[in-house]
Image (cartoon, helix red, strand yellow):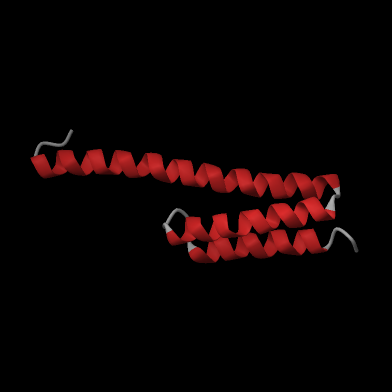
Length: 88
């Protein structure tokens, strides 16, 4: 357990940040899931709309430090590739 005042404050800050990051990560995953469900259903227009909504959310998560920016870019790229392959 933390003994010093600064260490106690640090644990409080970490707890707050953890909650915020969990929320952001969960939100990101929900957007990804919506795109994957649209891809699974085979509905290209719905998948494109879901991807368009998910893209800024993934980039925001990267900017906030929830995920690495390369991870966010990779996820967007792979989702876009899958969405584009629906019609073909």
